[in-house]
Amino acid sequence: MSQLDAVTSHHGGGLPANADVVVVGAGITGASIAHHLARRGVSVVVIEQSRHHAAGATGRSGGMVRAYDPDPVTGELALPSLAAYRDAGCWASGRAPLHAVGAVTADHPVQGSALREAAGQINGALSASAHVVADQDEVAGIRLAGGVALVEPEAGWVDPAEVTADWLAQARVDGAVVCHGIRVRQVEARGRRPMVVTDAGTVSAGAVVAAVGPWASDPVPGLRPASPVRSRSIQVSIVERRPPAPPHATFVDLRTGLYAKPVGSDRTLLGMPHLLWDSPVDSPPEPAHAQATVAALTVHFPWLTTATQLSTVRGADAYVSPGGQAPGLLSGTGVPHVWCVRGWNGGGVKTAPEAGRRAAEACLADAFSDIA
Ligand SMILES: Cc1cc2nc3c(=O)[nH]c(=O)nc-3n(C[C@H](O)[C@H](O)[C@H](O)COP(=O)(O)OP(=O)(O)OC[C@H]3O[C@@H](n4cnc5c(N)ncnc54)[C@H](O)[C@@H]3O)c2cc1C
Image (cartoon, rainbow, N blue to C red; front, side):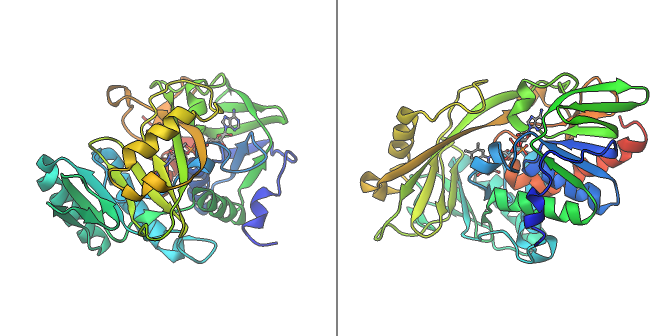
């Protein structure tokens, strides 16, 4: 059995009675945290309610990754994360998951100097060739419609489910137990250790970290983050891209929130902000929003006027308003040694390698002593 096959082999049986750290949720965030903990020799149990990894936002995600983000906290995580996605040595598969098709971030002209500064930082840190274009009609297959754009030729996209599977495989090789098909019902304080109550038994833990994505907005008892989290809908559409439509880089327009990425050689994923809050995680796609998304992106991809729409995917992510965001990556829950990871505001893939590393370090400290 290969390392990656091993990920799915623990369906519902053999839940250990004890662990240094229990990670709830096997999306990309939980997988990254589990990998970094297990690598440090910590005994880790991952508990996922679905029978598959990447069952939530992760499995529906476009996986666009770039070093730049207008939010400095996110940017600080995204830059080293892009380095990890480029580095074959970080992956059980032996190959880097990044599809380096390039990334274009458009913004208002007034942001030109901030983007140039960001390009300098990215190039210094990653030996990359990021640069800013202005007064240019088109770059990397994308019409800019005015404004300026930061171009990151070394960025692109990853397959989030593949990344998640790789980290879970590495965690298992390092001794972690990854359980699928088990739902955490409650986490409670028993003496000095939290007790994780599941529908397949209980686990006594040194620390618990909830990486439950949009489920954090309606948490099970004991996993309520002190800093409120909300769930917000994200809906994307896949369209056919036939010649003469050109290949293109991944794209985000910070002026409008529109985004796009290539899927293989003949399809494109399109997205537009879908400002629906707190709807059920598995709500069905909305056809009207899908049509509006294609229409809005036609200014950047004129070939969309004749493109065939193939499918629409809807998911949700955990969002935190800037004022409500707890400092750091982990929010307390009121139960000692039980933590909830921050909401990723639609950017959890591009930050996962570094966010998981830092969250693992915080958990590691907490599994054996209190952290502030
Ligand atoms: C359509 C879409 C497109 C996106 N595009 C991008 C993009 O291009 N770039 C980017 O960076 N980000 C993107 N995102 C955001 C990104 O995918 C998310 O930020 C990221 O996947 C969140 O991962 P997570 O592990 O925190 O949450 P999830 O992937 O939602 O994982 C949470 C897991 O916890 C499990 N769980 C929940 N409750 C329990 C319980 N009680 N017991 C056991 N298990 C439980 C769930 O089953 C789930 O598997 C997109 C998201 C969507 C939906």
